[in-house]
Image (cartoon, rainbow, N blue to C red; front, side):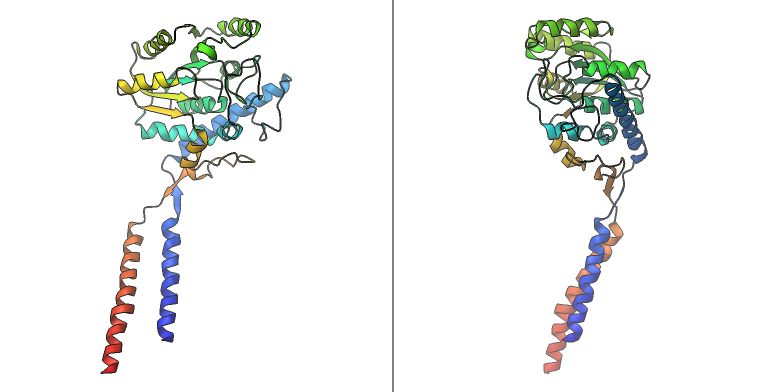
Length: 329
């Protein structure tokens, strides 16, 4: 009886050992280029933060706890809808730039491919993470951005997302940038913006040389936008960030013609499913989250464990039972 107990204890320890071995993870295949993209995004964040500090643009430390420079105020003249603060802070993690690399490669995207992009000022960090990934893989983004932003997004009317992008492009931090824009907000033409604010934003951004989409009829706006993306271009993928007025319509149009769609909207759910921490303080170092890991290929260990467990069952139940019967005789 004592030998049987020792045998069982030893067996349990061995099974526990194999359980640990089989649960181990290893670095993901494309970790180097994913880290490169995340590091680029981290540098973009630092540059925006530096610009804000130098120009006296307020940063609320109770909102932007990690001092990324990529979170805005709760409400301003160009705030469009309610946003979730935890989602906004989660999105400021440079790991999302690495995630875009992963998603692009999983969709078979290669150097030089054209990616259609619809985004707003609601998630400036995600926008820049996307651009970091586009630049890292030498892709061409056909990017159209809307100015309006939900709460805690790029909702400073004097320093919108497009102003951030312009700053980074002028200093050669980024290659990809928006080629077109709309005001966003009500009707996608800023109907809820104050007229003085709207006029100033239009005046400033019109100087950036972007195509302006300004159409009060939503169906015409959608058609014009989709045609602009696809005319004389072979689009390999459509990426939507945030939830502006045209998001769903554009996703449906691209799906109709068989173009894959990546939608970045429910940020906390996306982060959780890919191993990116939710609302971390501080933001973890690049390359350490589960995003950069994958399950080890442990086929041999599985075979050994299966054989061992089979041996335990056979030996303990059948062999022991046989010995007992023999002893009785």
